Length: 231
View 1 (spheres, one colour):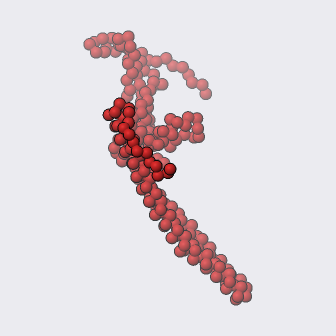
View 2 (spheres, rainbow, N blue to C red; view 1 turned 180 degrees about the vertical axis):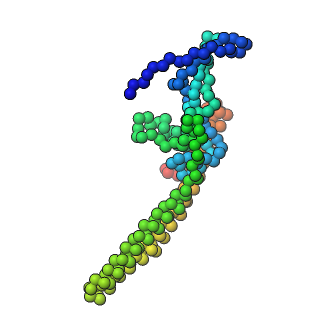
View 3 (cartoon, rainbow, N blue to C red; view 1 turned 30 degrees about the vertical axis):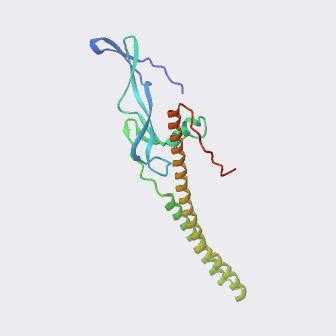
């Protein structure tokens, strides 16, 4: 369906100093703004942790005032739509045009109304641990059912005992070995994450120090000792 064309509504107004001005309004007039917000510790859609720094995009109704031979644009005070994005989501949005189905964002206002907040993200560790326990419990139940079928199969005692021993060995692996491996992997991932945080912090500190030295020395860095550990 094609869009119709509608002329803006023009209303004479009195501006500062009782000067004459014209107000232009139209259903299609809007203003968009992007802000970087600090503080709040908010939960965002498709993010596993809370954010103290995030991006907010607002679209607000707008009107244009013609005064002193110049156009002045004024936005409303109640956004028609307001969405929040993590800094990562914002970076993906502006760097991946025409790709995929878009980037997840958190709707905060729509049609001028405040949208309910998202609950705090669940711990992925707990989520995966719960899913693994459920799958293991189902596998163990199948093993127990198979053991019973072998017992009632009418096979010779020797053959039945050999098969049941294999089933019990697999059951022991499911109930003992795999949970231990999962727990060990989880501890390793925690250490890896902490190590990654330290690497990022060290890199940021190095960049800050380098930027400060460049400012102090006019872009000429003092003698630096290169790392020769890989030589």
